[in-house]
Image (cartoon, rainbow, N blue to C red; front, side):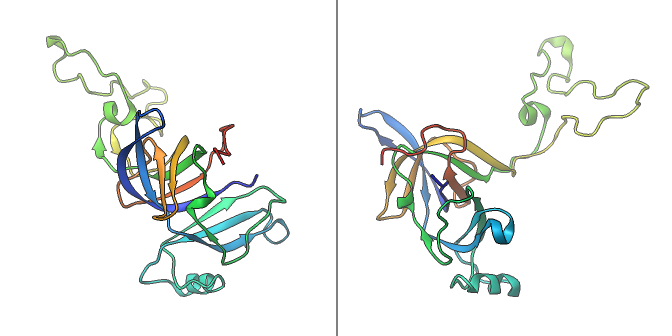
Length: 217
């Protein structure tokens, strides 16, 4: 089965009741139909992929406008590429992908940009344990500790986990579950939390590592 994917806007979180009347926290994603803006093949591009276009924007560069015109689009807010297996049935250029391509109970991965948290210390940024809070610690309880390496090499290595800007990065949460699909309002209800703040665009695609990819349907 070829992997599926769709771009949508994160609306926020709420809760629903399952068949056993248990509360299930869900994230609501409004995924209006995506348009296939490009189809890549092994013969032409060296690999198989489908480029999806979502939303619209006011200003579009001339190269992008010419690219989107081939699929019958005037503009696009976001473009994303979905790799597919060689030999899979590829959709036609200009075709649409809607929420009904996913089924209830299906395992998915969701990719988005995490919330920016500004400048943070090592305990918040890297989950350092810190030091004790006894009276003799002074004001070092949240400090990172030593970062040097003596006289040799006499410098701090690149990539050392230290304080700095955290959040605002591309994050993928794997093996989430589709709780419900609302085709009338073009909504996906996904169990648990997904990256990003409300109003951000996220990418929902078939789970890469889960065995349960088909759902109930």
